[in-house]
Length: 272
Image (cartoon, rainbow, N blue to C red):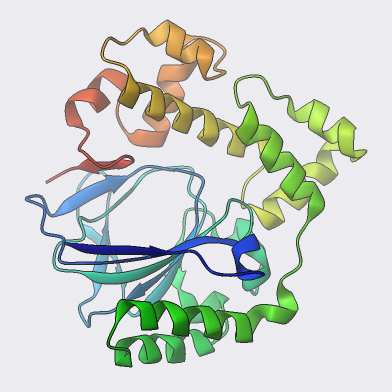
């Protein structure tokens, strides 16, 4: 397997965390359940084969994705191919930073995967053609960075409130108060929710739940003996029953079932 990460230069690095390229991945399983992680991506498929999204329960094909697609903020798991025999280049946005690249508010894309040319500039398909024509990984990174900067330079405006709110939530998800964040910036709760949904895709409360869930996932990876009450408390859940209920919504499994089912890669659960 070949993998490589590239961090773009300023100003793209204020919005994009990194580019990730991979090819030659050959796991034994063919389907993964991908858990909500608070991230959104542009995915360039550098093969001609369509990739499918499957029904979480029946595993029937429900959507075909090809060429380039945008994956919005998720509040529920999604069942996707494991990446076997794929070649992809992924634009991983920083949390809450994809909105300037889009033609519509982020909440319209929550829990959706859509053809990238429908929500980004149509030039995105031409960028893919240039990536296909590039022989080396480094050249692909260079072309992608140059083209994204050329297309979006005049749209790269940050939102100080969103940056502030997300930083507070990420720094201390087990203690942060959405009400306190609203008071600190002088906005009403309704206005806070409106701005957050436009820029992130969900309300601050929904975003906080995902971050708490992700904190729990991390703790499960780090601990050998599970104290579910302690994990629930450390991650900011009201009690163990609320933790288990949210965990099942976000993963499709109870925490105990998740431990038995999870694979080696965080947030990806082998299904078949």
